[in-house]
Image (cartoon, rainbow, N blue to C red; front, top):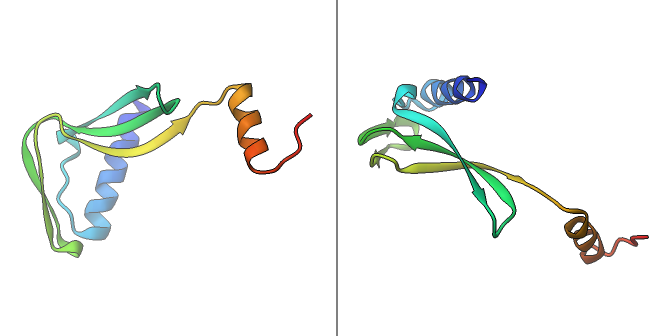
Length: 94
């Protein structure tokens, strides 16, 4: 529920600041696990086919039903991947 509220606030802000006409009800949050990248990907998923106008960019964006906007990543690290990242950055790891 909190995620849906954050989604609605974000889309309303785009509407306010960019003159867009996103309808928050036309999107839902979709979280996907990407095993190859070891991350959770957050997407906004269109619940129906529709068009969004973004006045500030003079752009019309068409969304197909189930089409997503990839909004963020949350990487998950194991002790081994942290060690590797630190060593790659020339840190001394004991």
